[in-house]
Image 1 (cartoon, rainbow, N blue to C red):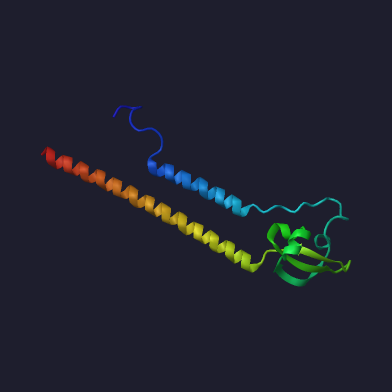
Image 2: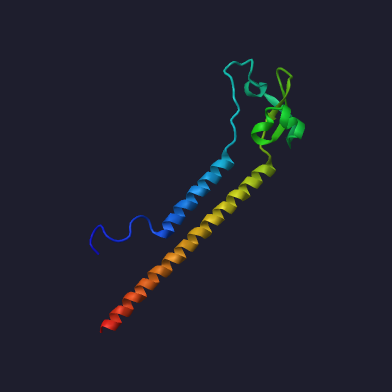
Length: 146
């Protein structure tokens, strides 16, 4: 076949691969987008747990519907823990990540990895069958020409 003729662009399998990769990337970005807490440089507006030692008064728990509306710390993860700062003796809420949430995110990630592996395994099988068919056709033509 002369140069410049024939099929242009990516093979159909690669189009599907790129489409799936773009979809997976968008899905991962949506999962990973957690708003960052805005912090001021002034120490008077900083939470006490950033500038001094603290003790956890209550373990990490899910925010109630009331807390979610009134406490800004609930916004980023949906979980808070109550802490008491050692020097100032102030009690504040601090955003935290629960083990249950981390486990849920881990299994979502594992599911995505297995899904991607299955898709690529299918693409490998399809491509191998195409190459086998081409090789058999080539051998058949060689035998017919004898």
